[in-house]
Amino acid sequence: MDTPTTWRPPLIWRAAQLLARVLVGAVARLEVSGGVPADLCRGPLILAANHISPFDPVVLAAACRARGVAPRFMATGGLFRAPVLGSLMRRAGHIRVDRGTASVHRALDTAAEAAARGSAILVYPEGRIGLDPGMWPERGKTGAARLAIASGAPVIPVAQWGSHEVLPYRAPTGMLRRLARAVLRRPVIRVHFGPPILLRDLHPGTPGAARRATDRIIDAITGDLVPLRPDEPDRPRYVDPGRPVDTSRSHRRRLPGS
Image 1: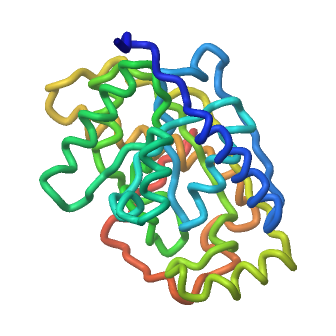
Image 2: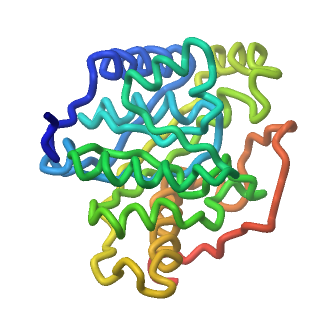
């Protein structure tokens, strides 16, 4: 019988991370900075990343491998319904999230149980590929924060930039053309693992705790994203013509010292 700390990444997931590193290297130059404390690498741990492209999961799998972490991704249910990919996702231990359905809460319960068993969990607090005009993190959903508060697992912000130049927002539409462009131009993709976010003062059941924790997580990701795009402080240089814009979830950037 499993004990609370027995989960270990399956070999198939470790192999997939290695493949991800090869794939990223074929179309871009990956730069990983920051790190995950050695005592947290095997979990319980929550990695909270901004979401800017369909290529993000491949980039983050490769970056996590570079830092010795094999997290279980909380991923959209559509991936699990794919004939081959879905089976691989389940065997690798990833967690299905059926957004917009009543069963979405079961995903948080599954993730909390996984954290209790010593897993590292990777989540996108925004809940979707962000549609902010400047490609800054949007106002987050509270699921990641509720998971962190309930499980007590430390949260490390993961900021990334550059993957939007590899795959279009509407992939697979336009995917081959964008991949060919990436192979020729080899954009730089930067991933930074920031210091753990302090949430110890927030407790389950406290009114407003999940929203305050969510804002702290988004603020931390945003602060770590700033140095990754120094020449693009407001708008990205590369704009995907197929990517819609939505300002309804814009998040006020509260940076250190502001």
